[in-house]
Length: 469
Image (cartoon, rainbow, N blue to C red; front, side, top):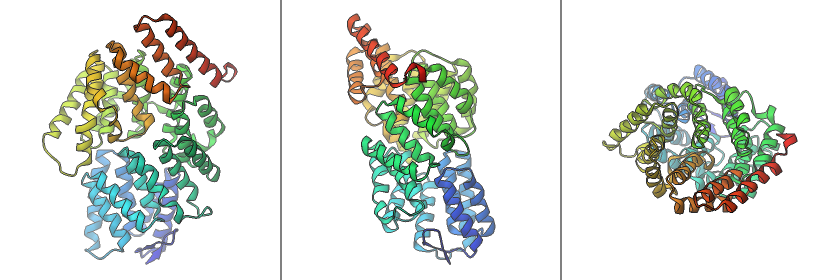
């Protein structure tokens, strides 16, 4: 027996393995690549240590790559066989049960188990981190906020992970709509840990949701060394920077970022960001065919099996952008066929049926120029899009598709409603005012169109002065 860095009892027979596990957890909270090596080293020292085996399984599951998840399932089964059924400590058993449930496809059940574990053991860093990520994958804003908020009182400001928990809490507050509070908490987290890329990302989200794109670009610039290299989150933070650039009217800068730091990487997360950025351009008629053509082939292995509907959506984007409509139809048909056989407890099947498949069909309809169909598919589910995961910023790609479909279909009543919602939430967003100008043009109101266009230009000039752009 031993204790981890938080004083929690673990059944590892090797002190070296435990030290490696603690190092892996630290790397995990910084999203650094060393988490993989440290986990492997912990297992090399003690192949049957429960917590390193759990961590290895969680890493694969969090990566959302079907092949890695399948391999992790086999490794975890060998670990369980090797234990000979010996009793584990209650906390370890709870983690093992969570892995089993998640490997079986029940991501919601895994999140619920970790929530119960956090109530009993609020200082379990791995339960907090993994549960927070599950809340992100399932789009559960309330749990993103309260899972961490409910554990914070068990931590002291001088605890090594306190700052990281604030970063996680800041992100949860932002997703739950508490923007002022989320900004304060997230900024505090980064002051405590300048290299906390999740905390930096939480700050970026607060600016994104408030339309403060100039502040976001300046924040990223000021902290460039803290986030731009050596971690799994580098590409995603560059993606946020590129979104700010698009809002500022700097498509050239966004594409520079794409080519230098985003374009086809190897992981699903990197491919998600690449598809999501190019799709925003696609919606505005900037088709970027060469970039899509380079991106689309990378998606094939990632969506060969149904694992996470949010990934499927971005693969469909890539296929449409590259002009591979047949591949988009084939993926949609494969998911439809998969739904025909019930998989009780499979969270992804639920996500696919309620949100993922309608969204994928709407994207295909957009690519085929069936804009009224886009509206018919997306408008009824627009308030449920969160159910297949991601953040508000990521899911805005779907909302923008709905809005652009309404404009192109000349369904002006719906377009007016959608634009009014956007402007009244983020009145400092040039994008929203430019869409208002589009709508005014459709309604033959040149005065309103000119006023909206002028407002967009003014907001850009005020947020990013020409000397700083």
